[in-house]
Image 1 (tube, rainbow over the protein chains, first blue to last red):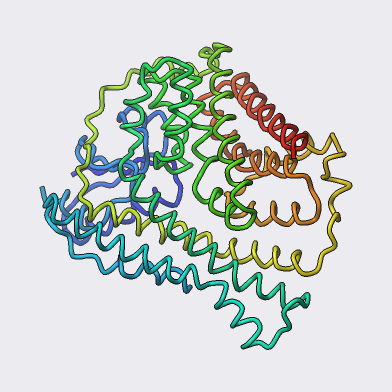
Image 2: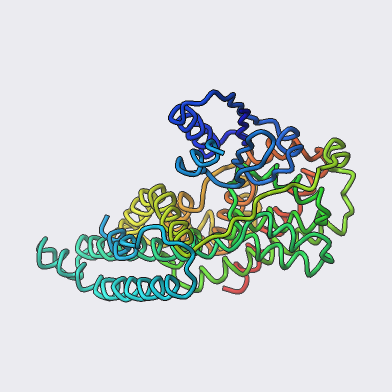
Length: 77
Length: 361
């Protein structure tokens, strides 16, 4: 699984990244987590409100920090 | 933190319910009404409670310097914090109806003038974190939102916000709050419109203009009322949790001025007669960065010491609306000329507002 957390790097963005990391750990799956902070790269995903989470090319959420429950639900699918 | 507990009845919300339409809606309406009723019951007794605390409990004399200062502090602190909690909660729920994606859809392809007005208004209610200003700029411009309309949004969003309005209302009265709201919107509308008239599209960095973004498949969340209440609660926790310390500090400063500092202390430097004080306030304010909560106590202190309202408002607006970190980050998508125009137009607008209020009040 390939997880990307998009965000220029404010407190909310790193919180989103942390939640994805704990969720992956809890779900016990193997996944790569990348933090994307380059504006051009973020824009290429069609995302313009951050933080956003993209899993295997699919946008899961934009403009908010996901809850751990939400994150776990995405990882199960 | 007394005031926050008043929201408690709301927090006793039922566990995540399925989106049952009318039943849950009715229940939330009831909980909301009871919550507001309780809030008001406490709010209306605050002055009496403060008097009890200052005069009966601490034994200070009514009318004495210290007594009045302490009363002011005991009354204003819970008052402003309660107002802040209620408004932030309400705005949190209101914002759950708006997303940057929906706002972009509304603004894309709008004609300029009407687009500028809409953008400035949507800037108030669209939730967005200040660090996503650049992604948002790219998202708007590439989707066909006119440049000037995008700027109206970007100017209004940080400057006209509920924290500034509540604090100004709580500490300086509704007139100052209304003036700030009105002129803030006006600056966002007119400055955006002006930038649009100047046809500065070539001032956007080339890579942004050449960008072809695939129509994104962004999930449009269906929110239940339960989710919306949670939005409100999160907003209260995030914002009031961060801001209360500034409020307390601001009121303490205010209480000190109220009781002790001679009036007219700042009148010679920032008073009406010092014509140069408006541009100086704006030039000093532009690179500075502070949120609304941090700057309002300063505003209150300056006003209390005899500074002119227009000068102080201009200072506050330039601190909140423009800042060095923001300019550095915008440089990634804007060429220097457009940045200079942006600062120039917004700065001029703020200065005009400053002179306007110095001359009529």
